[in-house]
Amino acid sequence: MVSIEAAPIRVASMHGQRNSRVCDRIMSTTHALTATPIAGALGAEISGVSIADEHDAETIAWIRQALLDYQVIFFRDQKLTPDQQIRFSRRFGELEEHDFVKGLPEHPQIIRVVREADEETLNFGGAWHTDVTHQECPALGSVLYGLDVPRVGGDTLFANQYLAWDRLSTGMQRMLDGMTAVHTARGPFGPQGRSASNWKNMQVEPSEKALEEVTHPVVRVHPETGRKALFVNRTFTVRFTDMTEQESAPLLEYLFNHACREQFTCRFRWTPGAVAFWDNRCVLHYALNDYTGHRREMLRVAISGDRPR
Image (tube, rainbow, N blue to C red; front, side, top):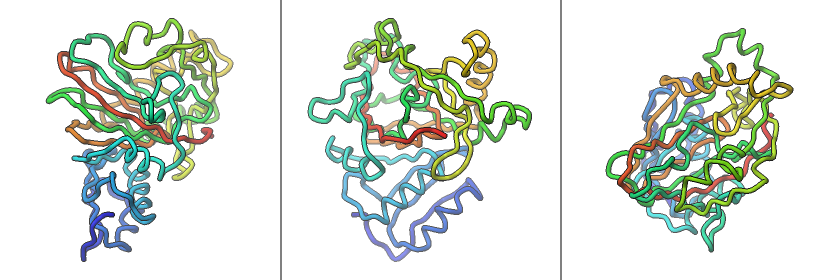
């Protein structure tokens, strides 16, 4: 359990009006949690809690609301066993197993994201993407635990897709709203995909299943906040519905570049025991590949989501 203090939960906010829901909640509790934003666009570090512990419903509700308001939240200096990581993640929904990456033998919901010091190929997650949008129901979010991190390098970038949508022109919004796009895992996980020559120390299993296609809206309405978010990504989105890839490429390329504009992003510097928990429904992320010669190992759990609408 989190500790109890006389003062309410504190939020050090630079995000203005969009954090009003968190601020409303903090006045009604005495747990000593603090959310401190790390950038103007999204992201906050949460202190005053060990996620290895069991927590009451009020604490979990506070963390969930912080996730909704900041889109990605971070916890430092955590010490998690696989069972504890799974227990915490399950408080936010059912967990899923990756279609193409084998989980730990006794914990199949946890995938090991590792790049050894002698590897020089593409790192796992080394492109702007939203997790598993090749699925009919992409993940709600992911909980990533830094087990072994480089002294420098290996940061992760996140991009706010609410802002990406809001900053499009009204003409572009009018055109995109109601459009759908095709997503597939063939690029990273198909028989001839990137995993065939990369990620040699991970349990990746390419298959014909990666050639399957699914259709999602280009603009997604978040099921909890009701806000619209741009919902395309370079890793899985290949074309607009009823268009060829060649016809789709110019507009998709514009949207891919627009989605990760600097003013929509935050950057997280990993430290041993750090945890990142992001909302996959409105956030892109990108693992930087700037640590060749150093080892990096993370443990990732994905929380099941719903069908985008």
